[in-house]
Length: 176
Picture (cartoon, helix red, strand yellow):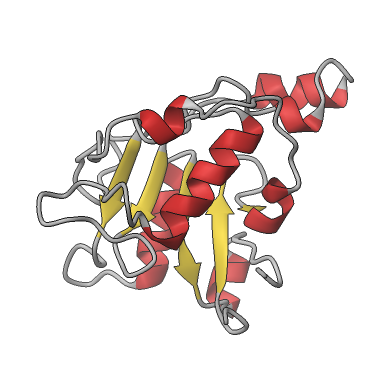
């Protein structure tokens, strides 16, 4: 289904982390995390492309702890409230009141909830959305680059292009 497109989680380190890789994380939580029980409306409503608003967190200490053998990879995101940017589409639909429909959160909502469950992080109290490129003279690549630079994670589907690869944005192969 997504052979020509890929769903990517774009992170601070390495600029992306593939969803299939994260799904291999085995979380310790047996109960439903706060990520699935949290608010249903975006908590960040900032102007697009404004460099003053940066929601990225420094997770270098977690990266160092993993490489030092102090934590396991599957625990690297444990108890973190990820600041996520999602594109509103059929993959992540919002209701007319701009809230997530708990019965039909879309594929990306379901994936983020599953990742949160397995990796022990939350996201629904700290997410933002966008609907288009946000203005005149902006491209989808501008939107992608802004999202990667402004949030911990950007979740959406993107076409792979030379321009995006040259900017350091990676695209994992395969999804299903």
